[in-house]
Length: 121
Image (cartoon, rainbow, N blue to C red; front, side, top):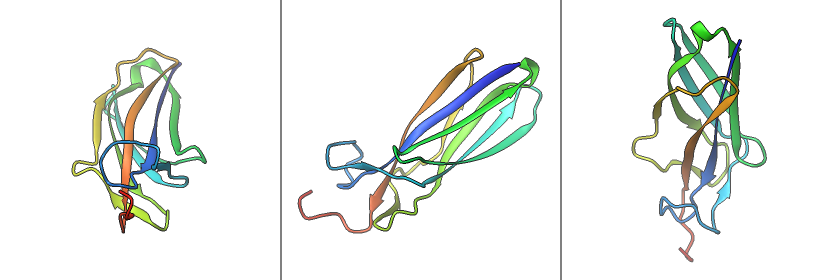
């Protein structure tokens, strides 16, 4: 069988500057949805939550003929009290999955902004 993995991070962009700096922190328990279309045309929908390091992972083993072809990842929600607003105007990340079996695709971090930006920013 073929094995694929998709992972990434969800971060609280404290100052809302769209870059990850020392003031920013990862978000545990943030929800991410990943939708993949397989080579055979089947649509697979995954839901993942971030761990204590802010990392979510989706992995699948399937026949080579039914492996992922195109996927779309998007953040669904952050349960963090202060950091709940999507930081990206275009939040979805669409990509073609061309990796051989056993490799993983890393998605750029999804950023959330705080409701109130701190004074030190």
